[in-house]
Image (cartoon, rainbow, N blue to C red; front, side):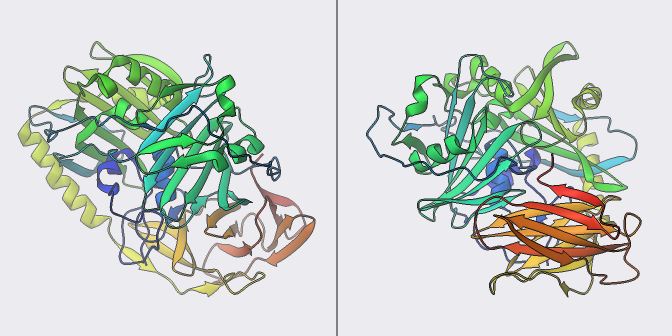
Length: 495
């Protein structure tokens, strides 16, 4: 079994493969280090990759109920599909003239260090459009972005609910910051992610069913939104903000593999289409919430929380011909302090960090997997969910599995509920620490129907009990964890 890290900025280069089936089956073939939060078990989960490209990983789901599907009238509108400009026509050089590092917080060590020249930009072959009202920013006005990518044969999305609109199966999630992320697979080969602010679920259903896209462009059969929104950009925000990473370095907390600091350095893009200051400003305005200006060695920099990625923050600035980006799971104010320690190092120091990274990767690669236990029941044969405890690099994890897919979560000292949309089912996964309640029940309510599942004590030596349920019908639902005394210990969607 394999626990796969969610895509991070450091991994963007490695993850994107125009010929890969990003949403496809995930076979468990090995082990990789954890980066915190829920993670797919198996090769790279495209739902997370799509969310990264389209502004972030989903963190919670809708509380507004199922949107009613409007009657869609297909019309021809003056919305010509636009293709994102190709930002590079030749080999992109590595950052060979300078190496960078940071003074990491106490308790952090080098986890990864590499310089990798690329022969194509990491977002080449992806369609993208951003539409917004004139006053819009990350968390104001009204806006949406659409990103498309090839290889999406099935639908997967964390912390979402499933909704069927005509021929489309949509995974809709609402984040704590007020953003909505909608994902679907078109024709079993094109993945689409819509990130939006100020839109209702009804509007998003109408938008999703009007999209005509391929892996290079985005178009619409119904462009009613043009009455108050205008096309702002068709340049991938990550490309505009961090350029094309060549140098990559990551620091990991020795006591918690979920906590890391990632630095990427790339050459500043020169083409007007993606290298202009205007495109960079637009991207940061909708990617970071809020934009906090600060200085690094006299260079103007910007930091903020990444839209749709929970507590992960990003800081970026330009130094000469280099674009430097730092991200971490910490408040933007703390990340600024780390960013201000970024400095150039010698080639000898860089080689030493690479040696240290190789040693640390070996020391954190330990993987232990316990016995599997069956938990879930539901309305059909695809309902079975099993769980097992695991240790990855010294960190305790919970490995949930169904069919050939699964999810790895990190236990905490509070009751937790996770959901995962996978093709045509939604899986509800819950764990309850013994110090919160000695026993309990998982209460799932959908369309007036109630399903109650007891928490199972799989092992007296484990400090928690577990429950799961498979929701086979599309539409929103609610979940509660009830303790032995009937007290509510956790709810989903989160308020």
